[in-house]
Length: 392
Image (tube, rainbow, N blue to C red):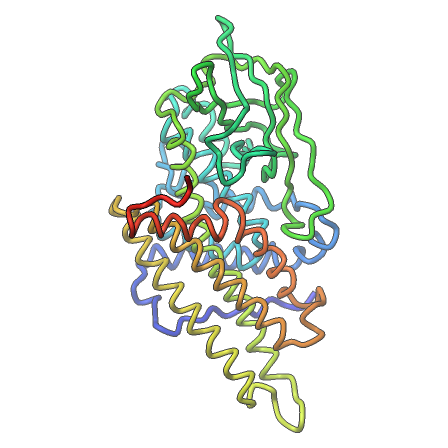
């Protein structure tokens, strides 16, 4: 395995805007990725296996619930720190970032924001250390962009709820200890329930044959008359806005994470272009390759500024769903285009596992779709600026 020589581009000196704490958090995550992810990730991606041995390391760098208060096991960091951690992890691999995003924004966040005090004390500290791993059940086989159409449901049976239905495309499902599941009650109102592995009728078959996110474990959640204790209902919020609030947090992390994937592709392409000689000179000295590289660093810089400002708004409690959608859509699209251009810079070598570009490209084909597709986020922006919904 070649050494990880990654150097992050900072064309507009954004480091000057970061606090010392931000830099320490970012640098700790970057060092961990170089040490623990880069040497193994190509092998795991080729084998379509999730490297469970990195879970402890993710916890140590604060990747699980970094913004959760310390009293519940989190690191008590701000939203920019969270974004920087996601950026560094996705620089290593989008699938690894997915594992951390799900644990933080889709499992720990709803328990913290909507859960009872008993639920917070029971689950959050163990989720923060990785002793417990979680997943998030919203998407269904027939309901993706329209989660409000879900058919998974539960009935009140007196001393428990009886849960039936299925969820699809669930990151972490095959090994998760708990699932935060969204389902309709008998009145059709959406609620969150914490379902624990081992409950009778609950199964998590793994999804195979993926060309994307191959180092991430994906599966289904099947509920066949699962008896869920009433104390496992999240009491703080219900309705579709509850799971969508979780997705806002996750999408914010993705907006930062995609920058990491783009930076890795750019850094790889720049390094290769300086070393690859054709027609008697490095290809970095040719106009066409300089055009590609200059456009890459320009788009990365724009995305960095977008994410940083969004982080400030998140810290101030001002970030809107539409603003988060804009950043998620723009930055993932940017990263995907950079991955494709970087692959061309490397020519035939770009398709091999000796370099990370094709892996990033395949991963980003999932990231551009999950947690709100590219087109759906465009319509969210359209709705926000025109006042008219194009969804109905």
